[in-house]
Image (tube, rainbow, N blue to C red; front, side, top):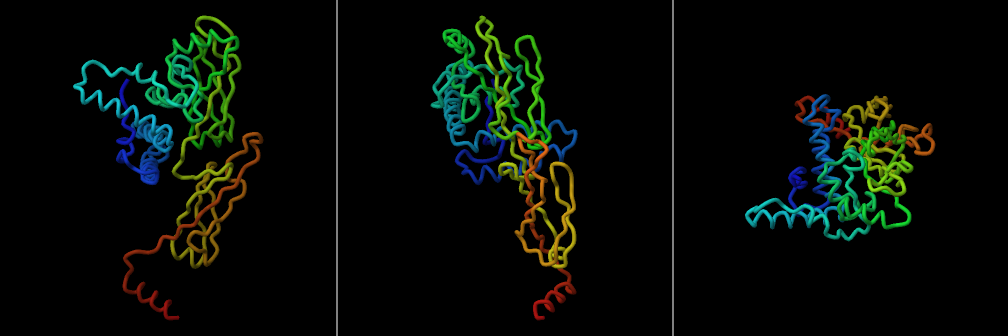
Amino acid sequence: MEYKDYYKVLGVDRKANDDQIKRAYRDLAKKYHPDRNPGNKAAEEHFKSINEAYEVLKDPKKRQRYDQLGDSYSTWQQGGQQGNFNWEDWFSQPSNTGGQRVNMDDLFGGAGGFSDFFSAIFGGMGGMGGMGGVNTRTQTRRASAQPRAAAIEVPVSISLAEAYHGASRTVQVGDRRLEVKIPAGARTGTKVRMKGAAVSPQGGRPQDLYLVVEVLSDPRFERKEDDLYTDVSIDLYTAVLGGTAKVLTLSGEVLLTIPAGTQPGQTFRLSERGMPHLTAATTFGDLYARIKVNLPRNLTQRQKSLFEQLRQS
């Protein structure tokens, strides 16, 4: 398995603080977002790598676990790289998160949404399924020894747009391929149950499988519960004199009326333009448009003169 350098993916130092990591992620996510690169597979894959790196480095527990692996991997490299790095030994180390980890590729045919590297290390951390650090064979033996099989949770990543419209994932369970619907309005932590879908290869009671949803960040929107926040840029003249501005929503662009004298940072509410409610998909939250005023640069002499007159009036 190839080691992934998440710090290199985001272009930050290993000692970068949360603000530096967040800023680097937002800049890269905007650059490689699929909406800005339609049909560009390379950009799409890079966008996935950026989201995966941010998922790890933004979370203190995941970052600590990842840094521990990085230290072990660096020590192995410095030792002359004799043989292959022993991934199994490292994965069997306790991660201080409790629970056990199963091999998600065996259960889901690689449909978890993240790379094998991510799934192997973080399958059981912070909301990712309660599965810690043992391999599939160990998990099977432990499960068969218990009178009642426990449910298995596996992370699935979706975009904010998929959370808005609803999504589906095809999973491989044994010799069956099942399509699982993820409802509109899903949030990070939403669980989609597949009752009795997993059966141990050595027999025993069927286990329930849960897809644990992780909604990826979208650089265009900030989500708070079912409300969305977005920035809308207007020029100075529209702010002073009034006019209209286009506002991006997850259901398309809408026109917002800008009243004369609008101030930078002023917020306008667009009713029911936010996320659908998980249990009532026909009811929506609101979208809040935060105004940013772009000031003119490189004024002509006439423009400067007019502004001087306004200042003195």
